[in-house]
Length: 80
Image 1 (cartoon, rainbow, N blue to C red):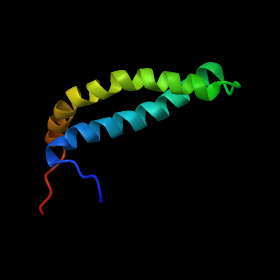
Image 2 (image 1 turned 90 degrees about the horizontal axis):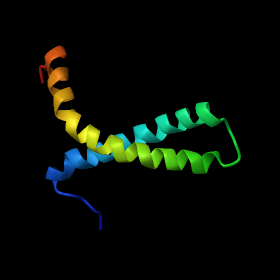
Image 3 (image 1 turned 30 degrees about the vertical axis):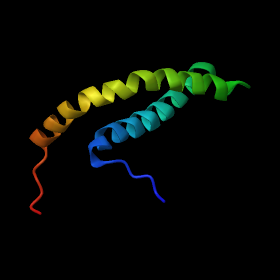
Image 4 (image 1 turned 180 degrees about the vertical axis):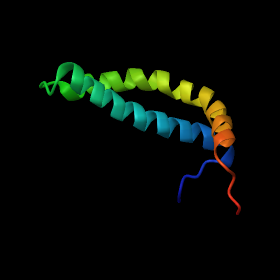
């Protein structure tokens, strides 16, 4: 049995995954630059990531339609 959500949830799932992964990577780099590889680095990173994700997720959901429109203005449609 596989869990498949209805297609209408695609933008929310996409936004959650994109914002989660991007905020994870960026907060890791920022944490490393700010504190270095200290003994409690992972705990500091996870805390920073959760805070960042709380902001990033709704921001991605809000700005994604605008970014799609801008992208469609600067990229030719495919011929297929």
